[in-house]
Length: 428
Image (cartoon, rainbow, N blue to C red; front, side, top):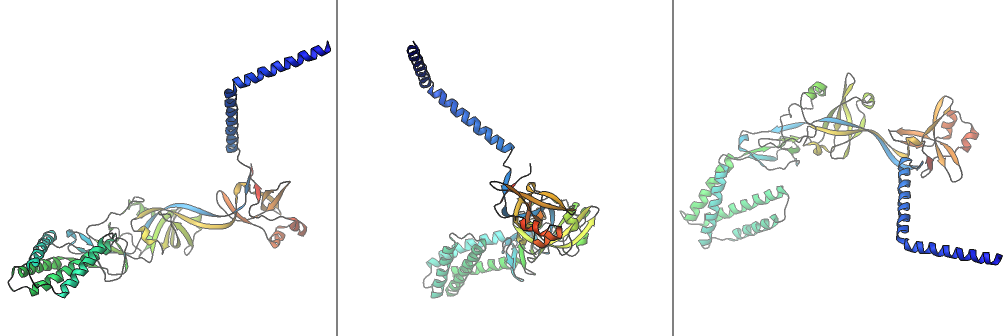
């Protein structure tokens, strides 16, 4: 009887197993999908938990922190406006925007009266002269052949050239060579001939064109600009005390607005220095002194050094005049800019402020971090060099400093030091 019962139980187990196997085979896809769904739900849950409760440790790294302050500034430059009698005729630029020039160099010229008409007539004569020259015999000397070769060379150089200044220079040289050829040809042409009449007529038009043109030359060295807006005699460098909050606000300038290009005048900007006047209300501005050096970040993102040239106070506001000697060309387009003042920067062992705790020692608050090791945690005293809103740069105390703070020689011997790549706890 007992054996029969055992046999019956075994048979029942086999039937149950076979049913389970058949169930698994029948619902194999559904079971796999269910398992995958469970895995995905678990992963999502872990990610959410990580976001809600991020890792409670960080590693000490070498890094830089700095204290920045956003500001709005007015650009003050030493500028000399160039404007001639024929300003209504329009400008032909000889030097391009932002180009550096020496004193006495031609910057631009005004178009002559009836210049379009004269240029058109000269071009028509050039065509007629070319046709007439092709019919003349024995007029081509070795000099004209050399000039023609020079013209061909200059024309070839124009292909692929993108520098406007070089293009203008090449065109001027081509025109000059063509004029020389015409003169040589005219001299060899019989008196009273049709060709000589054309050449003489061309000279007459050319003289009218040149005599009517007015050239403006640089009265000083500096940077050329055609962005003239009338503030050149208002925002000057002679007296920084006039730049009050009321004065600046009454200018009604828009931040970041580009100065339009003038068709009547140009100017030379001193390329050695410029100034930025800004109004601030921060503690850093309050503590700043004339002669202090700091860094600023310009709208382009580039950083440059600046010196506090002038400072005045209005109620709780502080008006600072900052002098810069580099990156001046980046400010040519603007009168009013957004920029950043970098009051200080510090490089060293960088840790989050949330990892720093404090202990009392002889009425002194001593900073420390908790370092995590595999089997234990220990407290590491740190000396804070600089802090901003999120991070601090720290270093180790010297033995003498620790003694002054009241620690015993035995305590100092047992104290660990902070090192790069130490894993430290974040305070929750």
